[in-house]
Image 1 (cartoon, one colour):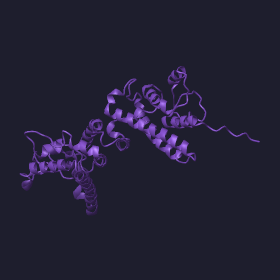
Image 2 (image 1 turned 45 degrees about the vertical axis):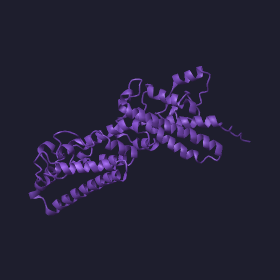
Image 3 (image 1 turned 135 degrees about the horizontal axis):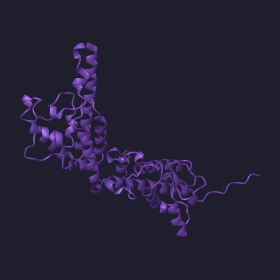
Image 4 (image 1 turned 90 degrees about the vertical axis):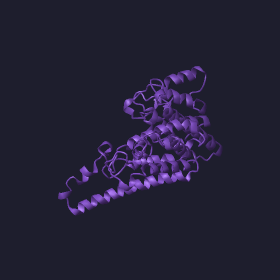
Length: 342
Protein backbone atom coordinates (compact mmCIF):
# COMPACT_ATOMS: atom_id res chain seq x y z
CA UNK A 1 0.00 0.00 0.00
CA UNK A 2 1.37 3.39 -0.99
CA UNK A 3 2.55 5.55 1.88
CA UNK A 4 0.88 8.94 2.20
CA UNK A 5 3.11 12.00 2.00
CA UNK A 6 3.42 13.84 5.31
CA UNK A 7 1.27 16.96 5.40
CA UNK A 8 3.14 20.27 5.31
CA UNK A 9 3.07 22.50 8.35
CA UNK A 10 1.76 26.09 8.07
CA UNK A 11 5.36 27.32 8.47
CA UNK A 12 6.49 25.22 5.50
CA UNK A 13 3.60 26.44 3.36
CA UNK A 14 4.37 30.07 4.25
CA UNK A 15 8.01 29.46 3.33
CA UNK A 16 7.04 28.12 -0.10
CA UNK A 17 4.66 31.03 -0.80
CA UNK A 18 7.14 33.73 0.25
CA UNK A 19 9.96 32.12 -1.74
CA UNK A 20 7.73 32.21 -4.82
CA UNK A 21 6.88 35.88 -4.23
CA UNK A 22 10.42 37.12 -3.59
CA UNK A 23 12.20 34.62 -5.87
CA UNK A 24 14.85 33.90 -3.25
CA UNK A 25 16.03 30.81 -1.45
CA UNK A 26 17.91 30.34 1.81
CA UNK A 27 18.91 26.78 0.94
CA UNK A 28 21.24 25.77 -1.86
CA UNK A 29 19.02 22.92 -3.07
CA UNK A 30 15.63 23.42 -1.45
CA UNK A 31 12.75 21.04 -2.04
CA UNK A 32 9.71 22.27 -3.96
CA UNK A 33 11.57 25.36 -5.18
CA UNK A 34 11.62 27.15 -8.48
CA UNK A 35 15.43 27.10 -8.43
CA UNK A 36 15.44 26.35 -12.16
CA UNK A 37 14.19 29.92 -12.63
CA UNK A 38 17.34 31.97 -13.37
CA UNK A 39 15.85 34.91 -11.46
CA UNK A 40 15.90 33.00 -8.15
CA UNK A 41 18.67 34.30 -5.89
CA UNK A 42 20.41 32.12 -3.31
CA UNK A 43 21.07 34.29 -0.25
CA UNK A 44 23.98 32.28 1.10
CA UNK A 45 25.31 34.95 3.49
CA UNK A 46 21.84 35.67 4.86
CA UNK A 47 21.25 31.96 5.43
CA UNK A 48 24.55 31.66 7.33
CA UNK A 49 23.63 34.60 9.56
CA UNK A 50 20.19 33.13 10.30
CA UNK A 51 21.70 29.74 11.17
CA UNK A 52 24.27 31.41 13.46
CA UNK A 53 21.32 32.97 15.31
CA UNK A 54 19.87 29.52 15.88
CA UNK A 55 16.84 30.14 13.67
CA UNK A 56 15.15 28.02 11.02
CA UNK A 57 15.84 28.65 7.34
CA UNK A 58 12.12 28.65 6.60
CA UNK A 59 11.20 32.04 5.16
CA UNK A 60 8.61 33.78 7.32
CA UNK A 61 6.97 37.18 7.79
CA UNK A 62 9.57 38.00 10.43
CA UNK A 63 12.37 37.45 7.91
CA UNK A 64 10.82 38.81 4.71
CA UNK A 65 12.07 42.40 4.99
CA UNK A 66 15.57 41.24 5.92
CA UNK A 67 15.58 38.92 2.93
CA UNK A 68 14.28 41.60 0.56
CA UNK A 69 16.91 44.11 1.72
CA UNK A 70 19.69 41.56 1.25
CA UNK A 71 18.32 40.78 -2.20
CA UNK A 72 18.36 44.47 -3.15
CA UNK A 73 21.74 45.22 -1.56
CA UNK A 74 23.51 42.16 -2.92
CA UNK A 75 25.40 41.75 -6.17
CA UNK A 76 23.92 38.81 -8.07
CA UNK A 77 24.67 37.91 -11.70
CA UNK A 78 21.73 37.64 -14.12
CA UNK A 79 19.31 38.93 -11.50
CA UNK A 80 16.48 41.35 -12.23
CA UNK A 81 16.90 45.07 -11.74
CA UNK A 82 15.78 46.29 -8.34
CA UNK A 83 12.75 48.04 -9.74
CA UNK A 84 11.63 45.09 -11.86
CA UNK A 85 12.22 42.83 -8.88
CA UNK A 86 9.86 44.89 -6.71
CA UNK A 87 7.24 45.03 -9.45
CA UNK A 88 7.51 41.27 -9.82
CA UNK A 89 7.15 40.74 -6.07
CA UNK A 90 3.93 42.73 -6.06
CA UNK A 91 2.49 40.87 -9.04
CA UNK A 92 3.51 37.45 -7.75
CA UNK A 93 2.01 38.31 -4.36
CA UNK A 94 -1.25 39.14 -6.12
CA UNK A 95 -1.18 35.79 -7.96
CA UNK A 96 -0.40 33.84 -4.80
CA UNK A 97 -3.39 35.42 -3.02
CA UNK A 98 -5.62 34.14 -5.84
CA UNK A 99 -4.25 30.61 -5.34
CA UNK A 100 -4.56 30.83 -1.55
CA UNK A 101 -8.26 31.64 -1.88
CA UNK A 102 -8.81 28.03 -2.98
CA UNK A 103 -7.49 26.59 0.30
CA UNK A 104 -10.17 24.68 2.19
CA UNK A 105 -8.77 25.27 5.68
CA UNK A 106 -10.13 28.70 6.66
CA UNK A 107 -7.54 29.30 9.39
CA UNK A 108 -4.65 28.36 7.12
CA UNK A 109 -6.11 30.42 4.28
CA UNK A 110 -6.39 33.48 6.49
CA UNK A 111 -2.79 33.12 7.71
CA UNK A 112 -1.35 32.66 4.22
CA UNK A 113 -3.38 35.58 2.82
CA UNK A 114 -2.02 37.76 5.61
CA UNK A 115 1.56 36.75 4.74
CA UNK A 116 1.12 37.39 1.02
CA UNK A 117 -0.57 40.76 1.62
CA UNK A 118 2.27 41.77 3.92
CA UNK A 119 4.75 40.85 1.17
CA UNK A 120 2.84 43.03 -1.32
CA UNK A 121 2.83 45.98 1.06
CA UNK A 122 6.56 45.54 1.63
CA UNK A 123 7.20 45.69 -2.12
CA UNK A 124 5.08 48.85 -2.39
CA UNK A 125 6.95 50.41 0.50
CA UNK A 126 10.33 49.86 -1.16
CA UNK A 127 9.08 51.09 -4.52
CA UNK A 128 8.10 54.33 -2.83
CA UNK A 129 11.58 54.57 -1.31
CA UNK A 130 13.04 53.93 -4.78
CA UNK A 131 10.89 56.59 -6.42
CA UNK A 132 11.49 59.18 -3.73
CA UNK A 133 15.22 58.55 -3.29
CA UNK A 134 16.60 56.96 -6.48
CA UNK A 135 20.09 58.23 -5.69
CA UNK A 136 20.21 56.01 -2.60
CA UNK A 137 19.85 52.85 -4.69
CA UNK A 138 23.48 52.44 -5.77
CA UNK A 139 26.43 50.20 -5.01
CA UNK A 140 25.26 48.29 -2.03
CA UNK A 141 22.68 50.91 -1.58
CA UNK A 142 19.66 50.39 -3.77
CA UNK A 143 20.37 51.58 -7.31
CA UNK A 144 20.17 49.01 -10.09
CA UNK A 145 23.64 47.56 -10.39
CA UNK A 146 22.81 45.59 -13.50
CA UNK A 147 22.60 48.04 -16.43
CA UNK A 148 21.32 45.31 -18.73
CA UNK A 149 18.33 44.60 -16.52
CA UNK A 150 16.34 47.61 -17.63
CA UNK A 151 15.73 51.20 -16.66
CA UNK A 152 14.06 52.17 -13.40
CA UNK A 153 13.16 55.76 -14.26
CA UNK A 154 10.33 56.87 -12.02
CA UNK A 155 8.24 58.28 -14.85
CA UNK A 156 8.29 54.92 -16.65
CA UNK A 157 7.19 52.90 -13.64
CA UNK A 158 4.35 50.48 -14.46
CA UNK A 159 3.79 50.07 -10.71
CA UNK A 160 2.82 53.68 -10.02
CA UNK A 161 -0.89 53.00 -10.06
CA UNK A 162 -0.39 50.10 -7.70
CA UNK A 163 1.64 52.30 -5.39
CA UNK A 164 -0.95 55.06 -5.29
CA UNK A 165 -3.77 52.55 -4.86
CA UNK A 166 -1.99 51.08 -1.83
CA UNK A 167 -1.17 54.28 0.02
CA UNK A 168 -3.75 56.48 1.68
CA UNK A 169 -4.79 59.87 0.36
CA UNK A 170 -3.44 61.37 3.57
CA UNK A 171 0.15 60.42 2.67
CA UNK A 172 0.62 63.67 0.75
CA UNK A 173 3.94 64.77 2.24
CA UNK A 174 5.73 61.56 1.21
CA UNK A 175 4.20 61.29 -2.26
CA UNK A 176 4.26 64.98 -3.24
CA UNK A 177 7.99 65.12 -4.21
CA UNK A 178 7.59 61.95 -6.27
CA UNK A 179 4.50 63.27 -8.05
CA UNK A 180 6.05 66.66 -8.76
CA UNK A 181 8.98 64.93 -10.45
CA UNK A 182 6.60 62.82 -12.52
CA UNK A 183 4.63 65.87 -13.66
CA UNK A 184 7.85 67.57 -14.71
CA UNK A 185 8.86 64.46 -16.68
CA UNK A 186 5.45 64.32 -18.37
CA UNK A 187 5.65 68.01 -19.26
CA UNK A 188 9.09 67.51 -20.79
CA UNK A 189 7.97 64.49 -22.80
CA UNK A 190 5.35 66.50 -24.75
CA UNK A 191 7.33 69.72 -25.12
CA UNK A 192 7.40 70.68 -28.83
CA UNK A 193 5.49 67.53 -29.84
CA UNK A 194 3.10 67.85 -32.79
CA UNK A 195 -0.15 66.01 -33.41
CA UNK A 196 1.84 63.24 -35.12
CA UNK A 197 4.13 62.82 -32.12
CA UNK A 198 3.72 60.65 -29.06
CA UNK A 199 1.53 62.80 -26.83
CA UNK A 200 -1.12 60.17 -26.12
CA UNK A 201 0.89 58.09 -23.62
CA UNK A 202 1.86 61.11 -21.46
CA UNK A 203 -1.73 62.34 -21.66
CA UNK A 204 -3.06 58.98 -20.44
CA UNK A 205 -0.48 58.99 -17.63
CA UNK A 206 -1.55 62.51 -16.66
CA UNK A 207 -5.19 61.43 -16.53
CA UNK A 208 -4.31 58.42 -14.37
CA UNK A 209 -2.39 60.59 -11.91
CA UNK A 210 -5.06 63.28 -11.49
CA UNK A 211 -7.68 60.61 -10.80
CA UNK A 212 -5.96 60.05 -7.44
CA UNK A 213 -6.80 62.79 -4.92
CA UNK A 214 -3.17 63.03 -3.84
CA UNK A 215 -2.09 63.27 -7.50
CA UNK A 216 -4.56 66.05 -8.27
CA UNK A 217 -3.55 68.00 -5.17
CA UNK A 218 0.14 67.69 -6.01
CA UNK A 219 -0.44 68.97 -9.56
CA UNK A 220 -2.24 72.19 -8.58
CA UNK A 221 0.32 72.83 -5.83
CA UNK A 222 3.26 72.52 -8.22
CA UNK A 223 5.35 75.67 -8.63
CA UNK A 224 4.77 75.43 -12.40
CA UNK A 225 0.99 75.06 -12.18
CA UNK A 226 0.66 78.80 -12.84
CA UNK A 227 4.10 80.30 -13.53
CA UNK A 228 4.86 83.65 -11.96
CA UNK A 229 6.82 86.56 -13.41
CA UNK A 230 6.78 90.14 -14.60
CA UNK A 231 6.87 89.27 -18.30
CA UNK A 232 4.15 86.63 -18.16
CA UNK A 233 2.04 86.18 -21.29
CA UNK A 234 0.09 83.39 -22.97
CA UNK A 235 3.17 81.92 -24.62
CA UNK A 236 5.15 81.83 -21.36
CA UNK A 237 2.31 80.03 -19.58
CA UNK A 238 2.01 77.60 -22.46
CA UNK A 239 5.71 76.72 -22.50
CA UNK A 240 6.47 76.72 -18.76
CA UNK A 241 3.35 75.47 -16.97
CA UNK A 242 2.78 71.75 -16.41
CA UNK A 243 -0.32 71.55 -18.63
CA UNK A 244 0.83 74.12 -21.19
CA UNK A 245 2.89 71.80 -23.43
CA UNK A 246 -0.07 69.42 -23.68
CA UNK A 247 -2.28 72.30 -24.87
CA UNK A 248 0.51 73.26 -27.28
CA UNK A 249 0.18 69.99 -29.22
CA UNK A 250 -1.30 70.98 -32.56
CA UNK A 251 -1.46 70.31 -36.29
CA UNK A 252 -1.05 74.03 -37.04
CA UNK A 253 2.28 75.69 -37.88
CA UNK A 254 4.02 77.69 -35.17
CA UNK A 255 6.87 80.16 -34.84
CA UNK A 256 10.24 78.58 -35.70
CA UNK A 257 11.44 78.78 -32.09
CA UNK A 258 8.48 76.73 -30.88
CA UNK A 259 8.16 74.45 -33.90
CA UNK A 260 6.87 71.00 -33.04
CA UNK A 261 8.03 67.67 -34.36
CA UNK A 262 7.28 65.72 -36.46
CA UNK A 263 6.60 68.54 -38.93
CA UNK A 264 3.07 67.84 -40.20
CA UNK A 265 3.38 70.14 -43.21
CA UNK A 266 6.61 68.49 -44.31
CA UNK A 267 5.49 64.93 -43.65
CA UNK A 268 1.95 65.10 -44.98
CA UNK A 269 1.67 67.99 -47.42
CA UNK A 270 5.10 68.69 -48.89
CA UNK A 271 3.99 67.25 -52.25
CA UNK A 272 0.32 68.19 -51.98
CA UNK A 273 0.16 69.39 -55.59
CA UNK A 274 0.92 65.90 -56.88
CA UNK A 275 -1.20 63.95 -54.40
CA UNK A 276 -4.64 62.57 -55.13
CA UNK A 277 -7.52 64.45 -53.55
CA UNK A 278 -8.65 61.24 -51.82
CA UNK A 279 -5.21 60.85 -50.20
CA UNK A 280 -5.29 64.41 -48.89
CA UNK A 281 -8.79 63.93 -47.50
CA UNK A 282 -7.60 60.78 -45.76
CA UNK A 283 -4.71 62.72 -44.17
CA UNK A 284 -7.07 65.46 -43.00
CA UNK A 285 -9.38 62.85 -41.48
CA UNK A 286 -6.51 61.17 -39.64
CA UNK A 287 -5.28 64.46 -38.20
CA UNK A 288 -8.83 65.35 -37.17
CA UNK A 289 -9.23 62.06 -35.31
CA UNK A 290 -5.88 62.53 -33.54
CA UNK A 291 -6.75 66.08 -32.49
CA UNK A 292 -10.17 64.99 -31.24
CA UNK A 293 -8.44 62.37 -29.10
CA UNK A 294 -6.26 65.14 -27.69
CA UNK A 295 -9.26 67.37 -26.95
CA UNK A 296 -11.13 64.49 -25.31
CA UNK A 297 -8.14 63.66 -23.13
CA UNK A 298 -7.63 67.27 -22.06
CA UNK A 299 -11.34 67.60 -21.32
CA UNK A 300 -11.18 64.51 -19.09
CA UNK A 301 -8.19 65.88 -17.19
CA UNK A 302 -9.85 69.26 -16.59
CA UNK A 303 -13.20 67.70 -15.72
CA UNK A 304 -11.56 65.38 -13.21
CA UNK A 305 -9.81 68.35 -11.56
CA UNK A 306 -12.97 70.45 -11.58
CA UNK A 307 -15.01 67.70 -9.92
CA UNK A 308 -12.47 67.56 -7.09
CA UNK A 309 -13.45 70.22 -4.56
CA UNK A 310 -9.82 70.54 -3.40
CA UNK A 311 -8.53 71.40 -6.87
CA UNK A 312 -11.52 73.14 -8.51
CA UNK A 313 -10.53 76.69 -7.54
CA UNK A 314 -6.94 76.19 -8.72
CA UNK A 315 -8.15 74.96 -12.12
CA UNK A 316 -10.45 77.95 -12.52
CA UNK A 317 -7.56 80.25 -11.61
CA UNK A 318 -5.39 78.55 -14.23
CA UNK A 319 -8.02 78.89 -16.95
CA UNK A 320 -8.68 82.51 -16.00
CA UNK A 321 -4.98 83.31 -16.17
CA UNK A 322 -4.68 81.73 -19.62
CA UNK A 323 -7.72 83.64 -20.92
CA UNK A 324 -6.62 86.96 -19.44
CA UNK A 325 -3.05 86.72 -20.74
CA UNK A 326 -4.33 85.95 -24.25
CA UNK A 327 -7.29 88.36 -24.20
CA UNK A 328 -5.53 91.18 -26.04
CA UNK A 329 -4.32 89.04 -28.94
CA UNK A 330 -7.16 86.70 -29.84
CA UNK A 331 -8.93 89.15 -32.15
CA UNK A 332 -5.86 89.54 -34.35
CA UNK A 333 -4.04 86.25 -33.84
CA UNK A 334 -0.86 85.64 -35.78
CA UNK A 335 0.98 82.42 -35.01
CA UNK A 336 4.27 84.05 -35.99
CA UNK A 337 4.08 86.34 -32.96
CA UNK A 338 6.03 85.05 -29.97
CA UNK A 339 3.61 86.04 -27.21
CA UNK A 340 0.58 84.09 -28.43
CA UNK A 341 -0.11 80.87 -26.57
CA UNK A 342 -2.77 78.17 -26.67
